[in-house]
Amino acid sequence: MDLKALGCVVLLPIQILYYTVKATVCWFLPSRRRDLTGDVVLITGGGRGIGRHLAKEFAVRGAKKLILWGRTEKCLKETCEEITLMGTECHYFVCDVANREEVYKQAKVVREKVGDVTILVNNAAVVHGKSLLDSDDDALLKSQHINTMGQFWTTKAFLPRMLELQNGHVVCVNSILSLSPIPGAIDYCTSEASSLAFMESLTLGLLDCPGVACTTVLPFHTNTEMFQGMRVRFPQLFPPLKPEVVAQRTVDAVRTNTAFVYLPWTMNALVILKSMLPQSALEEIHRFSGTYTCMNTFKGRT
Image 1 (cartoon, rainbow, N blue to C red):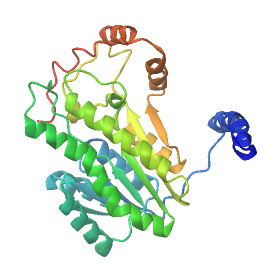
Image 2 (cartoon, one colour; image 1 turned 120 degrees about the horizontal axis):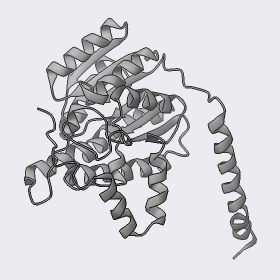
Image 3 (cartoon, rainbow, N blue to C red; image 1 turned 90 degrees about the vertical axis):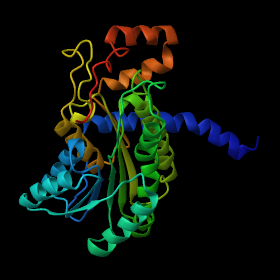
């Protein structure tokens, strides 16, 4: 080992300690927040659920323009009208992110009609809520195409221009189930785990790209129609999150350039426990919390 390599090895623990202390101190101090007044924000799955609340929150925080993508025109139109009444310019386009050609085509239309997207929010997702053997093959593929591959297509469509402008932010509304899967939602858990790996890789890949960053939000069970019927054993101890809270924390994470956000903050303990406890202990936690049976009453969107 030469002297330069040896120096790097010796310096690494010091750098790790420095950045750990710096992050801890910054956590207690007010952060400088991004001004959104010049940003064009595109939200996939923007017609309802968390996507609708994200659109409202970005509008409240002063975003210049909002663009909503989704598969249901009625929901998109209603949300778009609501945002317009708030005084923010808003556009919507019917687009299935699972369809690569459609994503690229609509991205071109967006650039021509609205302008360059500077904040991309990958929020679109589906869940079928069945075990592997009870799942239809096409339904399983649909989950992977929307929840995972859709992010590949949207990011490839808009990231190059962000890099040219040296101004951009890629956001993923993921799920804590990507780290702690449950029975009865194998399609969703698998696709969200893939999505998380995608964002972790992308975040590292953009470290040396000035002005462009990523944010991944991993919320606990959120009270939307997407997970309608899901029940936890102790709802008072583990209450579902409100979608407006998830939206607020997501926008705040973008403004403070926070890479990963766990909601609620107690979910950070889950990450630590998974790396420390034996599998048998983790299974006992699942039994205690009732996650083995929480999808038995699942209905999903009607």
